[in-house]
Length: 258
Image 1 (cartoon, rainbow, N blue to C red):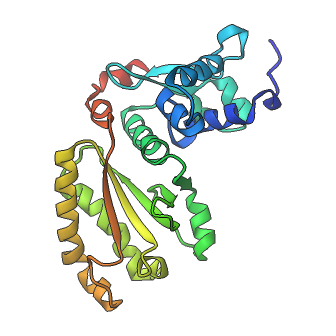
Image 2: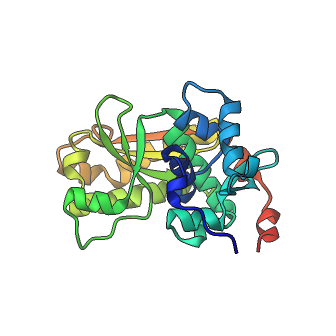
């Protein structure tokens, strides 16, 4: 068996590209916007090809279908071993995983490059002194798109019923207000909720339903803190380009990998 290449053989940029496969997604567009802002899409594709084993380089990435016309790249077992992460990151994503990783990657890296960063929930717990408590499993992120750092939580629309999307968004917020965990951030305008969806029609419907739900379900809690329900709490519904095609991909692709 040939020796496993040392982790130090990877450049810092290549290692960071590979690590996107853990919670986000590797595509040429994401690599371009995240790592090569002054480059070209062909330069991004070339960087990926080298990580796929081109020109006798070690094979760290393998292509998988993203939707009917695009591919994404997952880690190979070799890459997972070199990075020191679980082998579970070296298997193809199922449909829900593809939708989640694609939406997150576009929101964090492509929509406003350099202005958003995912943050582990353990860091949020440490930052806010919440040891012993469990936060929702939704992704958290830091946002500086307004020039002022905010902590945010992301909800991904997988094409569930609108009522379900609203419930999933409002329920954690109600819990936060009940415990007072994020009060300082919420009432100073430094906390935001971001919903990622796949069509303009869906974006408008979710926005309207969320506004109604916040006033109806959270109004008393917000008023108890002397806050207008439409005041400092920032709720954003973002349209993610290309997400509709990922959602529309037939489920038979999952069975091919089982």
